Image (cartoon, rainbow, N blue to C red; front, side, top):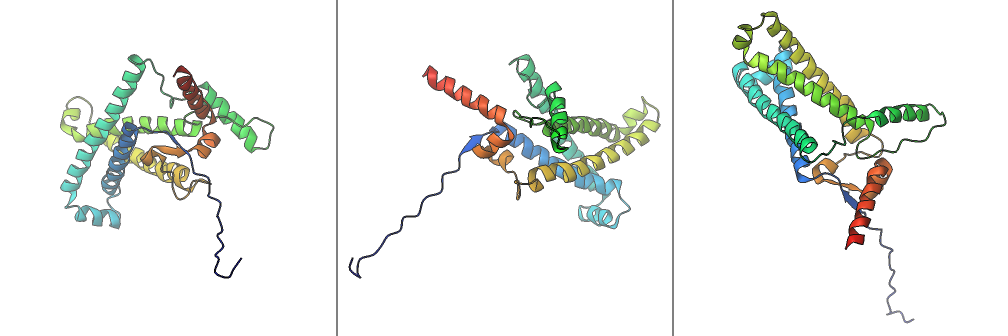
Length: 245
């Protein structure tokens, strides 16, 4: 080899990361609207509930005063309620028309998975649970979201139409609704901050964030690790489709 001849080193290419489609456009839009309306409702609602706090007072004034803050909160409440109503209508359509059972609704297997994972965490000999589309944590969080949303919507409607409610029910219902609404909202915010954000951001292997609900895609590796039963079903359907062709 002469000094003028150059040597070339070929670097091995890293294997291309494979992804699986997990959420469709409808699900992603629904989640974004829920996230945005819930966040704005939490801000405009909690500053009214904890009105004696200096930050709350400053925020109310920055939004244009208490009447403007209440108006914004009620408009957001209507948007949030319409989103929850749409979700229930869609669930009913899936169940009645398409005869499809929602995969996020808890069943007996989830309670067995809780016991199996608890035994596994305590060092007892137990097979590690295999999850389908959603694990028991996601399902229980979903049920909590729906139940909490119904409480917030019901008490919010009472507070939105106090004269109508007072003409039918005793006045104590208004005071109780205000307390229930504020405490349930506080609980919901704490649940999101402590439980949900940990799950999608700070959980080992997840940082800086789980973006699948925004992109709609999840890596094949993570799919196999976290949702092996769903992945097996996807592979089986794909095999059947290719065989049919």
